[in-house]
Figure 1 (cartoon, rainbow, N blue to C red):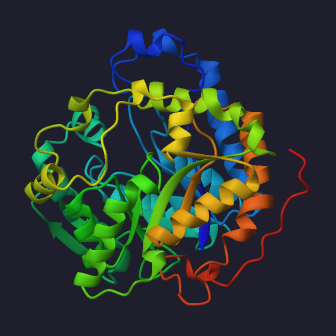
Figure 2: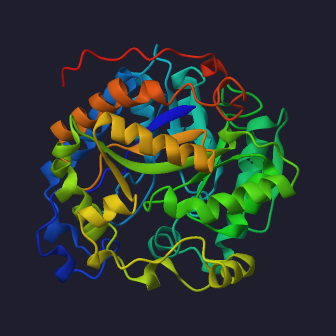
Length: 411
């Protein structure tokens, strides 16, 4: 299987009374009240350093993502980060995974097609192209996308991007939302007809159906752990069977918070950072994330009748609750790998995205976490599935099995 380093790049030093001062980590915090510009620059550089450290440590891919107007994660343009990572990892067998640029709020979407093609060329054909529909806060409030149009815009934009990558002639695009008189993309991706496509989602039934129909990789971006994802996982694999697709585990990705300690007794080092993540960074009212019109009818009906996950009052939970519920997996290397393997097998995960930095975690602790994970956990995960299944959702030049070459252990 493939194990990739995911990074949200949050603001790491919010004030203690942040949740009392602001109703949300999204939209409400004013830059001049909260941010220190020098620190923000440091966070960007730490994030790049942490991702590059993970690449040297042997993780298979580096994941960036896009959000707007919030302290939860402010890679406003993940392709800037991806371009740096692509150039800095030339000569390494690591995928550059853009999880990624949001199509509905980018006009025209051929801009994303161009930027992704640039990254694929810079990396020598190591791009994984992620196409999220985007959070409603990002699309509707930050970028003015009409909620009921968001998914329809998304699907038209994706069709346009794929045609722009594949077409051997100049063409005009006269769609409902995008009209372009001449499309003749420069550059094109090295990977033809296009790079592997991953579609992130948080649990929408319509997204699951769409991804399986088009044979893309579905990436479940959940912060509530593998056990809490079983309903969605079962629905996903039922959809795969119903649509006549194979049960290849590589068609499913999953995001998991992970903290590795030298011993089980040392896990308390992660406690304040997990609580910071769930209490401050996920602090948001439902009306920001459940904007009317964002969900289509099929997804809304299923959400109301068969919830794909349990609802939680995160403010009432503490670190031990997060660990017991599996939101975050922490412990000794043996504990972490056993819990990961149990969840991976239960959900049939082929692409595991590990959040090895979360919350207010300092740079040095993140490097220690990456180091312990890559040396003591990764070797026990990566051979799973490879003897039976081919990873069709991975850059072709990286598909040959790669031995992990652990670093010396010096952080």
